Image (cartoon, rainbow, N blue to C red; front, side, top):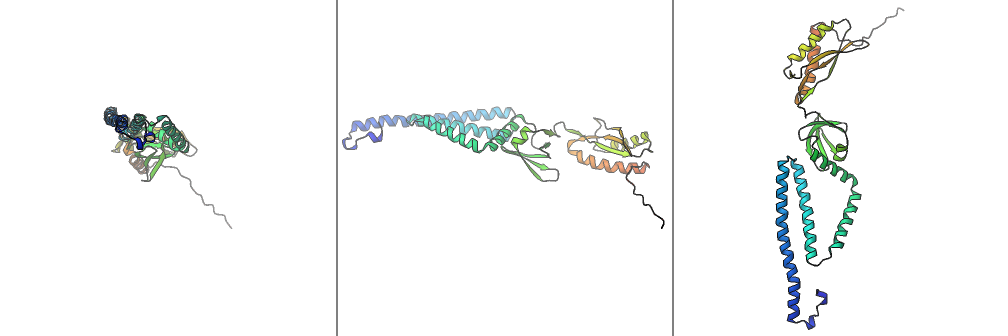
Length: 276
């Protein structure tokens, strides 16, 4: 029985009671389903939050997954309520599926970034504060969002990388191991004494306060180039001290080589005078 089938001219108390009984029970049932369903959803979300916290999920990933669970469960609850009230849910579900397909086709790129963000948050190739290199950019991870990851570049510029490309490309994480090797190449004249040069270079490394002892710094002949003997100078430092060690060691090496009388070769311009 529905409202269109009721003949109000011949309406009597028995029909009213039938109507109230039929639809009243459905409404009461729907209310009970909503109350119980809301309680169940609340507890599912609470349990999920505890599980993710114990599993050390990123805070942003926790919020995203909890919102996803919440909306999914609420939609399921609403469909159940509509079915209890006698509303056909098959067509309703078909409409939702068609709308989802249309939105998915329109937002293919965004969905790829969305999936990439989920993968990054689950597998954690990096975390906030890590120095990474990806997609041709180097920077410190500032924010990990659902669609993009934001870095602070070495010159304090903001770099925004889509998560789809980020999750599918190579990622170099300079922070994970805690230490980094600084790779320097120093060339000296062929007239220079190799042992003396190695001693001067090693002294510069071992006297720098931010160069660590383990792994130990190394100085080795790298190659015999056209106009110089090139040395591979390899100090190690904590990741956050990389550029300090790099720049200060370069400066100190130049000063130390000059003080020891060891020449760093460079192109000379010879001026030829022609007699008139």
